[in-house]
Length: 152
Ligand SMILES: [Ca+2]
Image 1 (cartoon, protein in one colour):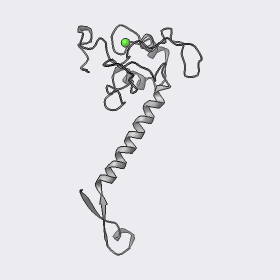
Image 2: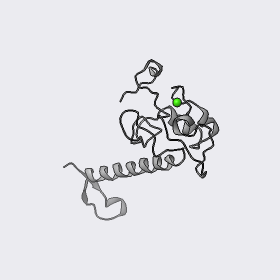
Image 3: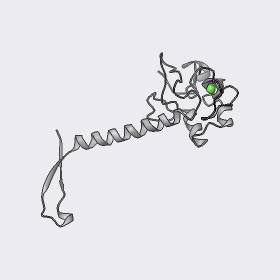
Image 4: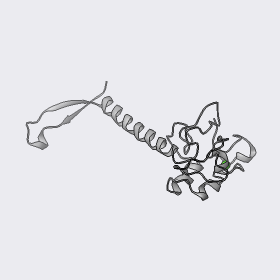
């Protein structure tokens, strides 16, 4: 296990001493902090879009929690919907709803179950079920989606 020796005493006027700091422990905490921040961000954003917690996974049966990213866990580069959502201030606007971020011929609202763009985070309107992913052009690999460098 790698160790890093830091001089922790001399700057405080204390006698110079060396203490081992286990790098793997530090990296674990950094990783956990980053993972928590990422998870809390996309969980917060799920509530900011219609059906944000049940967006279908375009690659397999299941959901895609990190809707704005090319990775289902919400890490890494944003997809076109994620970029548009960020540009809208992370708010579900009429413009964002009516836009076809992934250029698959369906608006973001149609894909997320809000075809009339009436949903807000506090509304009580009934949503349709989400049909497809708003940030990943489907069918994946089709000629219509050839512009998108994404494969399952
Ligand atoms: Ca679309």
